Length: 237
Image 1 (cartoon, rainbow, N blue to C red):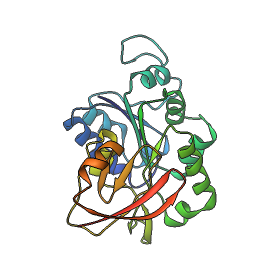
Image 2 (image 1 turned 180 degrees about the vertical axis):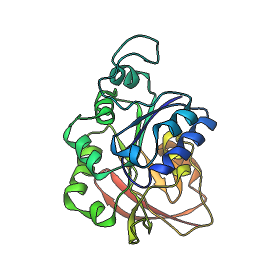
Image 3 (image 1 turned 90 degrees about the vertical axis):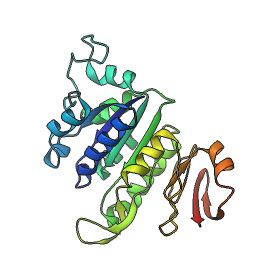
Image 4 (image 1 turned 135 degrees about the vertical axis):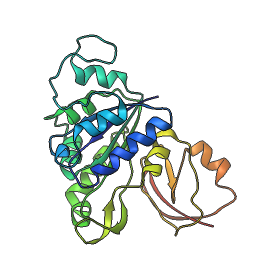
């Protein structure tokens, strides 16, 4: 499994370092692409040490391709990946992806990714930014493209001091979304997440549609809301 991890500017960028570490332990080979603003929160050297690979910062960089050729990196890295994830995904980068803007290494690589790979987006931002109608429109556009699974941010006390929706999901939830090896958290309160049309997330569990039928039977489920192909579920012990 080959994971291409994108990191954008935001306080939650520090969690991406743990995601790299846990992904390597789970059997992924990991390469990291950063936006310029992401480097203000976590240095590239951190990700290079954890992944064992150089970090991509320049959209026009050549050489260092995974297959050893001199190909332009944003193309060769996109072909290399079997899985992709941007965590955290800022409002700015989310908007660029939705509009097809490729003005840095991260957005250029993500536009070059082939269809059909696992491609998880994990937005993280202030609650007012997340709730903004333009941001929600951009999320809808990305979901409707059929290329992405969008994990809604969680609700908690944010770095700015506000309490609300906007926090990056836990690293375990991100890994579960990437691998499809779901688990059920029995201890915490019921939670619902929004994902794209090809996935279910139930509380702290990510389950494929097939696995959902087999694993979730022992639990009482309440279907709380359905919007088109995007489903909200709540699970109770």
